[in-house]
Image 1 (cartoon, rainbow, N blue to C red):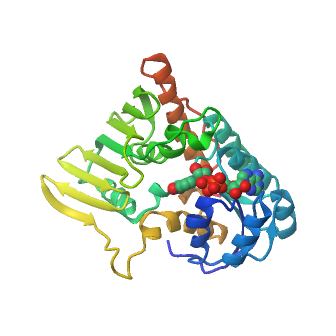
Image 2 (cartoon, helix red, strand yellow; image 1 turned 45 degrees about the vertical axis):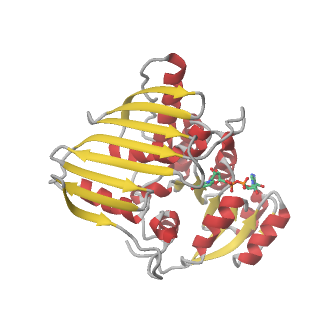
Length: 341
Ligand SMILES: NC(=O)c1ccc[n+]([C@@H]2O[C@H](COP(=O)([O-])OP(=O)(O)OC[C@H]3O[C@@H](n4cnc5c(N)ncnc54)[C@H](O)[C@@H]3O)[C@@H](O)[C@H]2O)c1
């Protein structure tokens, strides 16, 4: 789908580290007017308004929404605030993009999904893995009859140390960092019927999965690597000797019976390559903007909040398995939305 030509009016809440380095820079690449910028810290809001051509700045989100009446709200503030701010916007009939995680729990994300359905508005989550160029190719390959069914998925994702402080969702390795690969296995493997997890403290996890399709999966997460050299590898195996390997969400190789058939290998030393496109940051914001401009339906947005309900349910089933020492089933939430809006 091409980028929407119509300019849409966006407001943004949260001007912290991630918003400033990865979210606001996307606006300049898309046909948007940044009509309002908000942070609890007015100095941060004013600074981002100056830096990213914001037309006004606020320290209260409700005041901003009532004054500037944007087409869409972009929120980058942490999972608890994502829920409260999404509901605030939906009450005013405004569509919402929030960063990941959509909520601190599947039940909270479900509340947002229900409110989105009642309002007939899009709420989407910033799951960039669903929007990178390599993933676009992976999904196209997986849709070919030759690839056939997925039989196995293997994920290895390692970072530097995270603190896991009680009550502080942003410090939780399994929630804040691993929500990306947990969501990605749902995207490529579909719904998970059963999960079993073992852990070394709160830093390393070995997890097995049984998908509803019958496929099996493994996920290995550890925060005992290094922020300077994180590890991110996914392997997807089809039923007829077809193997897809994705590294760092950016590079992809597709082998059939041992011979490379396709790949994605962007060259960052040339001006033509753009890591914000490759990593999916621009792609996810483009999907939001296209929807606001009327050229993309809610159904065609890959990371609707309904999808976050499923991946948060998988995250919670991992925690439940760690507590019980047994395989657990992720909670199922009924379809939360009528389609086609
Ligand atoms: N997609 C990714 O790769 C990625 C990477 C890093 C962080 N994130 C996510 O981005 C979000 C923000 O992370 P961060 O590191 O930028 O956090 P941060 O603490 O640096 O910034 C959060 C900002 O939100 C503001 N805020 C919080 N509640 C608010 C409210 N109700 N109204 C107005 N402003 C409010 C805070 O004042 C703060 O300035 C988190 O959910 C995090 O998980 C995503």
